[in-house]
Structure formats: C-alpha cells, structure tokens
Image 1 (cartoon, rainbow, N blue to C red):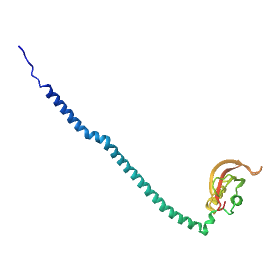
Image 2 (cartoon, rainbow, N blue to C red; image 1 turned 90 degrees about the vertical axis):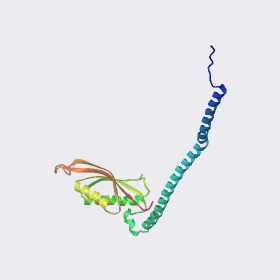
Image 3 (cartoon, helix red, strand yellow; image 1 turned 90 degrees about the horizontal axis):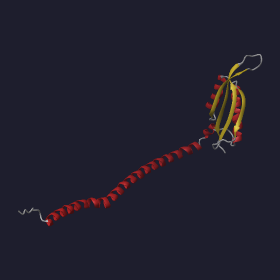
Length: 196
C-alpha cells in the first residue's frame, strides 16, 4: 500500500509565493519613492509657504509702522515749531538754572500753603536727558499739602511728583501751644528743560 500524497509541484508553489512578493514590492515601490523623494519636497514646500506667510505679515507690519512714523514725524515737527510748547518746560537751558527755578517755585508754594519747608535737594544724578529732579522734605497740615501738590501738578511748567511718602507727626510750634498733628512729607518733583 503505497500511498502517495499528492502535492503541488514545488516550482508552482514557489512561483506563486514569488508572485505575491513581487506584487507586494511593486505596490510598496510607489510608497517608498514617495517617502524617499517626494515627502521631503512636499515638506519643504509647506515650510516655504509658512515662511512666505510670516514674511508677508512682517512686511505688512513694517508698512504700517512706516506709515505711522511719517505721521509722527510731521506731528513732531509741528510741535517743535509750536511757540506755546515752552510753557511745559522749566525755564533755563542748563539743569542748574532750572533746578534753582524749581526750588524757588516749591518754596513759594510751600509758603503760600502754610507748609514748613525743611529741605530741598537737587538730584544731580538724574537719569533722563533734560530731566531735573528735586527732593523735597516738608511738614504741613493736610490743606497745606494739598495746596502744594495741586500747585506743582496743575500749573505750568509741567511737573511730576514721584516717590511720595507721607507720615503723621506731633509738632509743637511753641512751648505755650499744644501739640498739633501734622504731616511730614518727602517727595521728588520732576520737570524737564528744553536744553542740555
């Protein structure tokens, strides 16, 4: 009893496997070509579009700034030729002269408001060009303080108050009078000159 198992000839089974492998390679070939050759090019094109969009946005911003700068230049020129602009600056072309004028102004306002001016000191290390800073120490009631602050900030030239520190103290004007609550105030007055 010889039984023979019938099977496909080996050459036919191998050729069927080879065909499948060949078809698989043939199907994978376009993907491989795309991945090796075309994907970097497509990525580069996308990056180039992004860069182009960024550059267009920057160009639009530069054009907007350029248009605004021309307008600002015209406005600046008009301000420079405005005869009324000097009223906003301290008198005197030099910082020392402007500082002296500012000290006189503070002293006059303190006297008019009934405040006791303890000290004024010009700050020679002012950081801004043409900036004049005066450190003030005074003692007054609330009305005097309001009068001095209002006179400095609401008048001309334009002045700014900075580093304001206010504290309450008991002060006796003489031995015969009772102690009165007063405000001890330290602040900086800042103004600007046109020169220097």
